[in-house]
Amino acid sequence: MKEGEVLIILIILLLAIVIIFIMVWDSYKMDQRIANENTDNVIIENNSINFNSLTLKQKIAQMIIVRGDGYDKDFVKLNIGGIHLDRQNSEESYKGCIENYQSNSRIKLFVTTDLEGAWNPFRRLGEEYSFPTISEIETKEEAYNLGLRHGKILKELGFNLNFAPVSEFEDKVYGGRVFSGTKEEVKEKLEGYILGLQENVLGTCKHYPGKGMIKNIHWSSDRQEISKEDLGLFEDCIKNNISAIMVGHQIVSGELDSDKKPSSVSKEIISNLPERVLIISDEINMLGLRMFYFFNKRKMYKDLINSGENIILDFSVTPKSVYSLIEKLEKEVEKGEINEDTINKSVRKILLAKGYFLD
Image 1 (tube, rainbow, N blue to C red):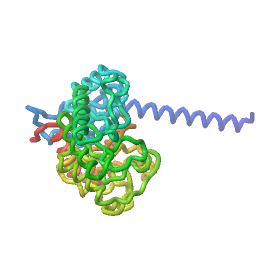
Image 2: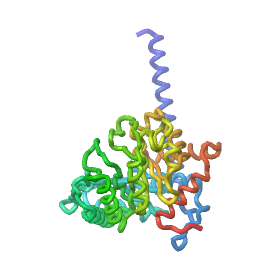
Image 3: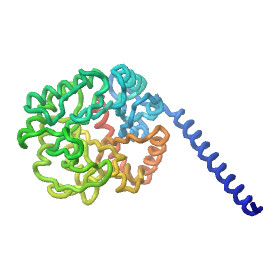
Image 4: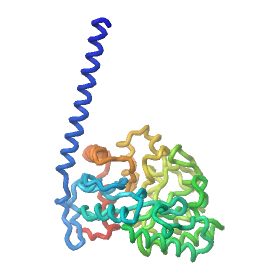
């Protein structure tokens, strides 16, 4: 090997060592910054929160729900808004994990899952956790009883927010997640399920504004024409006091137009929803949304917040990545790219939905 070639190899190795050192050092500094975070500043007395005691970072964190399988104290330090679980193998594991999070969190967490009628997150737990699919439900009374049973089981395990029911007419992706029958029968079953479920936990009608399960948006984008009947299902959900609406990533036209954007980042779509309901994005790592941003997460979050989403589901973050993201979003607020009043409005809704009073 010639001297010049050896020198080039040595330079490359040196550069690699420097890059690795910088990455390790940055990771260490991030660990230290997270370790210094705490929520002692948040003032809570008699279930009443002094809203102004929260920092901007803590308010942004309240808007994010992360995957919580396996307790992570750093999520608690960051004042994250909620955890999503569906991978535990026993009742004790679910209850223990949830209790660990809730007992160590200054502000109560949303604890969420997708018990929505076809895929069952609790299938490993035994026969008592076996349910009929939504499409097998024949009457409004059966729908009420299923919702009641779902809600009771969720509450007993420690959950407080279910991402169900699917308020659509067709499920061409999974099968079994939508009620069958005439349009009137579907509406009646939705009403029954919502009434039963919300006796114990909060419910979520999805995927607004409709036709979110015609194509699998986990893997590609989709365009759909929205009809009055599609919107009518969500209007019925709202009339029946559903707690939350989940907005899907489908690009839509027709009775509502998302302006060539996924519905979840479209102010034109979200502004049609009433103030009282929590507005939740569908999980944001689905390619139907991420491809629209060429994986630019900061811009995606900026648009999600500015469009009116109150809660953002992000199941791929770690404490380090979400902390870094929150810091970047804080700078976007300082630059005027994100309206701080929009964040405050969302966080107030979140805290009220968690059962707090606000000072």
